[in-house]
View (cartoon, rainbow, N blue to C red):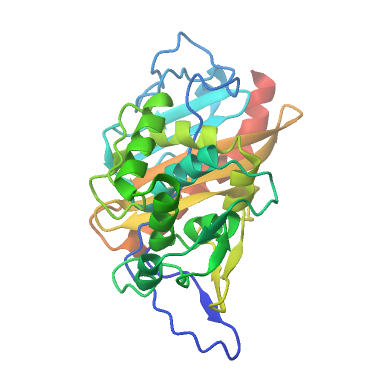
Length: 334
């Protein structure tokens, strides 16, 4: 994300901590086709969306999508789906683009697959290494402060990775899980393949690498899968997190969180990637409380991270507002 998340030192903490201006943040994720009955998919299973874009892997667009007038972004890519209803469409050319810190959705997903946690539980104990501590004070990326030799809960580290988007914490968790980052990246790519994310390639665990690329449709498939995990849902809905021993509190980089039913998910921005946001919201549709997932990628790419992030938030806000206004009526007509 462009501007660093709010970091508030506690009184007398004496901690000095720098945050970078160039922040690749992760955002949003979706369930992969074939992982369980999340969608009631209409159509033949091809990538059909109507005019303007291609559908996600194996997804057909729900019939009611034709009666919706969604304000799709004029640039980049976007994809939206509703639990129990199906895809509402995908817009923009689905070519792989840099996704910045949205990468961390997959990082968190793999960690939780390898080390499952109950909702509200602290999870395993992880000892921070010297490298993660040294990287806490980087001037060129987004980080979160950790102290070498200190024990942290798995949950707190996942929060520090997802809420303020700590790149050093993402790398620490990867080394803890797989021994080294390269081995963890291989796990990420195997997982992506298993979810049917054929247009996705991970080359790092944090999103700093512009060679990590994906599409809105693929990231929606990941988000759908990740949101099945209650621990993941709690983490991405966390409004703020404090770094133990550092006296610093960070606000969630997702500015939509807590508004219009939004319960997650992940932001990501850099100059090459533009602004990216994966979001999750809950909405009453046809008498049922349903999860709505959306991905907006590559907004204002080539500008500043701040401009890209603002554009991704605005595009997502417009989609959510239109869904809240139109989806219940469209579902009743269907």
